[in-house]
Image 1 (cartoon, rainbow, N blue to C red):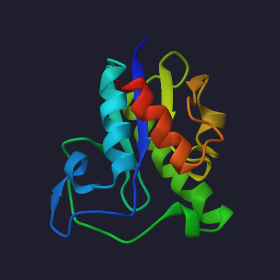
Image 2: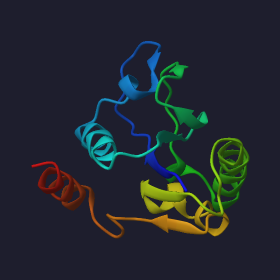
Image 3: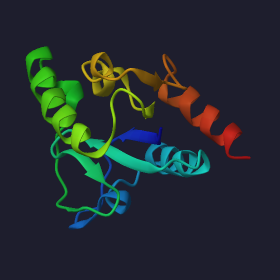
Length: 137
């Protein structure tokens, strides 16, 4: 069993082609990434509204797309693409998946994953930042 962390993308990005782990520049993303590393996972992926599932080192172009502005049908279609990619990288039956992602980014993924955790479920962005800062002290 592996420990996998999934972090959602954010709107604040660099304006040039960059590694996925570097392109997202909001404090929330940076704290999520630090927290993810602190959990000593086997792997970390980013859930991107445009690209689906990203490895930290994937080189991507900046974009302006969010699941928060998509319809349920569009989010379900996005989730199917992500699940297809996840199945190639993780064992959805055995691996432990930790979501550092909002409801729109996990809603249609969770039903395919047997063992998952959402440590900041239901927290506002401000409370997520507080949680992350506390955990990283």
